[in-house]
Amino acid sequence: MNQRRAATEHKTNERVGRPGKNGDGPERHETIYHAISDAIIEHRLKPGARLREDALSEVFGVSRTGIRKILQRLALEQLVTLTPRRGASVTRPTADEAKDVFDARQMIECGLMPEIARRMTPEAAEELRDMARREREALKGGEQSAAIKLSAAFHGRLARLSGNATLADFVERLCSRSSLILAVYGNAGHLGCESHDHEDLLSFLEQGNGERAQAFMSRHLKAIEASLSIHEEEEETPDLYRIFSA
Image (cartoon, rainbow, N blue to C red; front, side, top):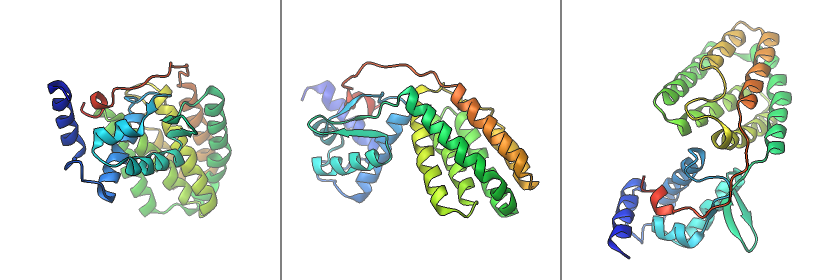
């Protein structure tokens, strides 16, 4: 290993908290999972980018078995695609998939608004308002990945208030898929909607106005979908040392 690669690896160790080649346990796996997930959502790892187990094992200093488990977890969240005899790559959402995801969110989330309005409590509204505030602060601070995750968490928490756990689980999966679509095809520094949208939605829900909340949610989701700029990118083999030492 040359001096430049050694120096880069040292920075990578510091970035992901790597203790050395023998540090291979649940806490390390969680750290690596978040590092890869953030790199995908922040678009440092682009759609279609190959994620070789041997390269990731070397970069993070854990076994290939550990890396394989992490990639399988990311695949369950649809951030990574696993292909037989080819391995893992960052999922490449298509225009049709994006439309399907947002159509599904329109049908489910908008339909849940009247029941959520009936069930809204001051405590739940305060919790959601805090999530909306942290989302705005993350976006203002240039933390795109955190803002996208907080936005998805806001929608997931709203769905939970409906009392329908099955639909809430589905909404959370759709939001995870939307997060990748937004990270890949959205605009940096903007989530495709107005920064005060979640606050405005909460106001309707607190008033018990499910019909207004339903209409507002529909416009909110349409605005996000309309902001996307979907285009094909060439497949690449990324420099993992550079990405995870940045």
